[in-house]
Length: 546
Image (cartoon, rainbow, N blue to C red; front, side, top):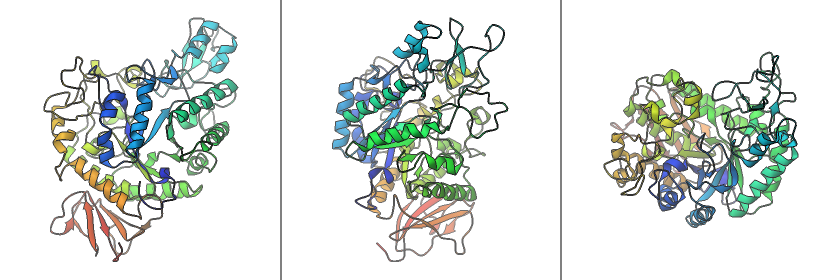
């Protein structure tokens, strides 16, 4: 962790690496990434220089939505390993100085969860159904959904059961929403938190943080003029997180929460990060921003201002398991990100340009105040795999949209570790099965960990160097920053951090001179005649300070 202050909690400055377990490393040769593979590769993560791991769900699941449909919150799916292996992983990570954050999915479960199965069996009016949102349909025979809510994965957010009732699912039909007004649901999740805390985890990433509580009466969205939508960001959600925070604060070792929160209103966003609620939240506005200096600066200022309202640290993220990889985004004419993936899919991509910009963006985010996230493969310079054959696609967004939305499989392709043939070391030699998503591009052989290891010009060594410098610079991580504006090109982002650290990001179309400095710490691209090239960034030490 960046050494801003030995008393600063780790989560205020941490660089956290997201592991998507199915696609990280396959230890037993069955084609699915697992805990055994992750344990064997922990050295890679420790050597990279990150502070913590965030693991996407590894719970028992039918995998209708990549594990975000949980059938048992207190056990590991056999495809990934066992609880004993999970405990060993946590212990081994701690021995390497790595903290472990696990995903928690509290808005919905799997249709295979025992409580939901009991609700289906119990029938209309049974108390088991009160744990979820069962309703009578509209229309003469109850044949219409109870309201007009739409699933995030396409189509109505309601599914009709065999006995004619409807249940709410804001995502896939295989993911029924919990009823958080029910005390048994609240007690169950406090128990789940205790289970994993007792096993040694250091925190939780909370999936769709603002969805848990729904507006009374579940009113239609159409004509609903109140803010916010009736299925998100309701007042009652804050009571839940205050109870969670009280539980977490009773454990030693600075355990922490991070919220998945796509909230655009700064005031409402900040409410989740009050001192008695959650610790941090993902900063998605920067991920969605175009590669444009004015837009990026505006987002950075707005982010820091929103967090300052409650004294919380900002976090910075460029890609994750739900979004198009930023090497691809930054190589398109339209460099912004939106959920309308189909509108951008198949557009021309300049991967060389996208890679240049991705390296510059890494230096930008790692220099900004607060913490940062690295999605697995970011450190290798991987791009979005867009030419996945239709019959291999598994994302429910692809299936539910009838193939209109190309889905998120392209950012979930298994990682390349070594070798010159697929699966590039993802599975052990002689593995009996192909990777679960068998679409690694041949070009990735040059991007494998082994191919990049020791090459000072490689993406991997660039990340290792950046993270090492970040640890060494006392002014990085949590703390203040100042824009340097005197006589500056508005297309160049230039800011200072304590200790004489300075970061420049050149988003103009031409090379620019560096300001006077005592040391050039790192550049994302080689200087050209002493100038910082376009789409490049530099870290400097200035003003004679060490």
